[in-house]
Image 1 (cartoon, one colour):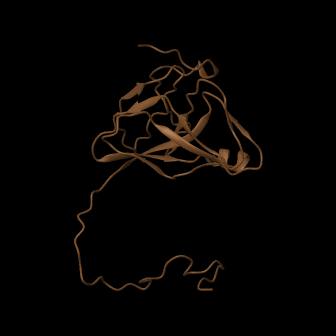
Image 2: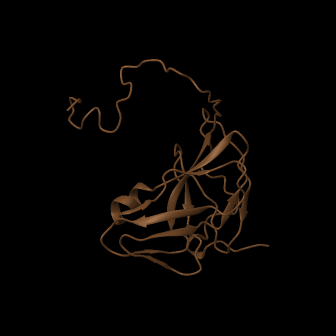
Image 3: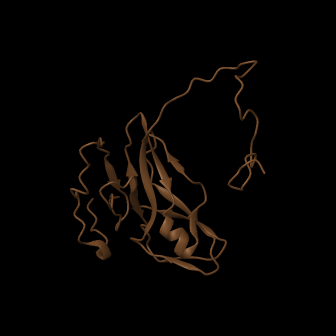
Length: 177
């Protein structure tokens, strides 16, 4: 099944050369399946960007009222290879300009997940926000994963921090207050 690209972004080719990976960066080929009409292939927007933009794939405009959250479909599924994960992260401009953030951040896309990528947006702002199909709503970062082997232990090694938790270093530049 073939879907046309979102008309708002019709200049983006199906398999763009994207920003070619700089010589000192590795590249990883990840198959992407289009699940909805208007779905847009995530792209790196600058040469050294860590994240690719994820786009909304909506049938109609979503009105996100203040304090409300919604699962926004991307219209794509990924085949991330074993040893890697996808991290869904907020877009700083959306947060600053409109107060829109991700509820669970970063969201994790496991290598064995093949369903549609959804982004849970929340409006922390004071005004309703319109989300249109094709809008850039989050970033996707592909990262290596290391599995840990956990074992029970009666003792843990001591550190300078030890059990110091939430706020233990203070908020002042001198710390400790």
